[in-house]
Length: 213
Image (cartoon, rainbow, N blue to C red; front, side):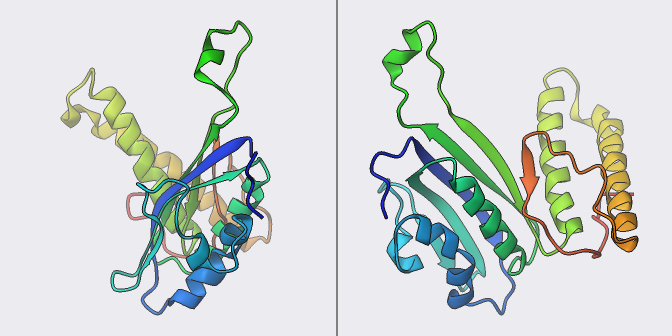
């Protein structure tokens, strides 16, 4: 049922490339935790965002894309919903994709900023989905390279940063090799720390990310 007094406004933003054979019914089933959380009976009923200027949840069949720019009132229990949705989208994704989720503290007023002990509970989570671990790591690698290069270009020319990018590739290459080895031995993957972000799972095996050597 709708959460009228929910402590958060939760914004989900991302674009997922889907396999060509994926249809609306599969997307609706994969996103069922989302639309049920919103108190709807179908994806179509929940596809509209809390804000009219946001496109909401769109399945673009011709382009084989799932586009999300959608806000819903909720609580911390929404995090479990996200885990379920990511696991479901892994089954439909053509390539790796990042999904940004922002929790805005609906109970924090601007006037509270002036109070000595006032603290907003805003939070941000980056989720990753993909058909296999390599696809997920590829997206993580690309985002990290983009962030690092943007930061360091304040002090260095972009042409000077090849060595930095190479070192990032080495780190992801090591993580991928550890993952492959652990899967082969039937053990959980090592070195899976995320620093505030996490992936939605994925399947074992698969190709090695193209930038990892």
